[in-house]
Image (tube, rainbow, N blue to C red; front, top):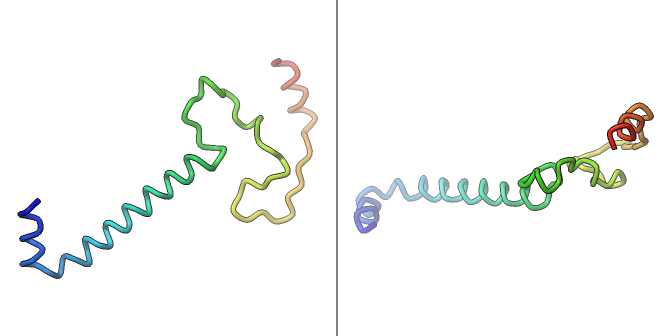
Length: 85
């Protein structure tokens, strides 16, 4: 670790590069954690919840920008779902 700081003292032009790389790594990690804990389509435990799409609220938009979203059930899919249960 001491050698790293000695190298930075000798080559000061690396300081902004290391700063930007640290900022990018922090941003990527925080974005991954945000999507992991807030988005319903990210699944960690499939054995506990094998069909996570059934728990989604149709009135809540799942995209960043949704224009004229109207949800109504598809009759064929409801029929298939009733057969599988």
